[in-house]
Image (cartoon, rainbow, N blue to C red; front, side, top):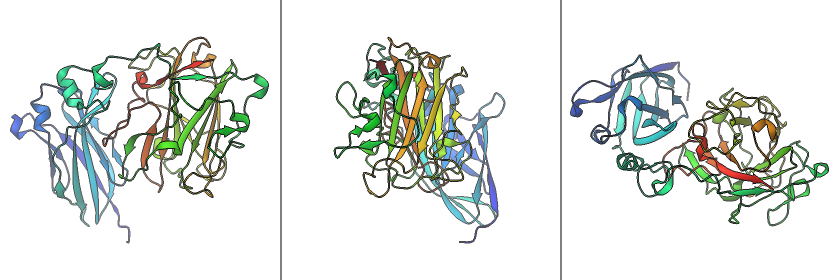
Length: 405
């Protein structure tokens, strides 16, 4: 298909001061496209309308970054769309609640952009409000109405800092693994061998350390998780060593500049004192690491990382190297070798005391075809259960808990 000139879809979301039945959200286009603000939110008594905002994602992976205009209830966002194409637009009403984004209602529309840039709605779904962040059988909206915690199952409030998920074994300094994105091997059962043989590979309950909680699925075709993304760790009293293996079936991309979450990448999180606060403090860190350099996917990456939006700006000393396709044989297709991420984090710089637990999380972004991210997976972050959720970037209390042996 011949690509025509891009038409700019300027989306001003206007929350009008009308009666409940007349309240609408309007996308300015040609002709005008309107999306109704769900009555269930208007009449629920919650959320706080001053903290409510829309998010919009198109099926091409583009996210409209909505900016509030002044102090009112109007937002504006812009995105490029291609004339003569159809798009699926997912609109989610989100409340900024306890330091993170809480999705409450979701609507899906099929849009068609004509050759002159006009936008027509082909179909619109009903709003769904069954989004359940913590998978406890009660929707986020129900939990807000019941004044229970939508981020913690069964309405609990906050984490138990004494509950440790993983004990990280100690290794002699002369036996630590080389951080080079190479020489990561496994046996026939998939257990790590060689330099990483002594690393912890399961949590205190015996469950493998899989990064298998599906947080984001933009195209509805995610695999079953399981051992396709996993991690292991050890320490020497000075550094924490981490290895992550990702079976990406030889599909990886780095085409989004500094927006690394839209490419194949690893996110790691540390809460140095395991305070389990709901907002980042001076020893809460978030880094996003690319799997490969932009100009050569076969070469290891050892720079190009970016900090998460809420991360502490305190110095964090760490090294990382990635080996795209340099790991063990693929689990799905043996000839497509797994991607390697190896990290070495200085404990003192992260505020980690060798005798105390600390917060920790790993998440993997997957981009199989270029453009926007396809899926995102987490270790401790709850699965999205059909709704895209991404909480740890703003709420460090969602991290798991590690302790050094």
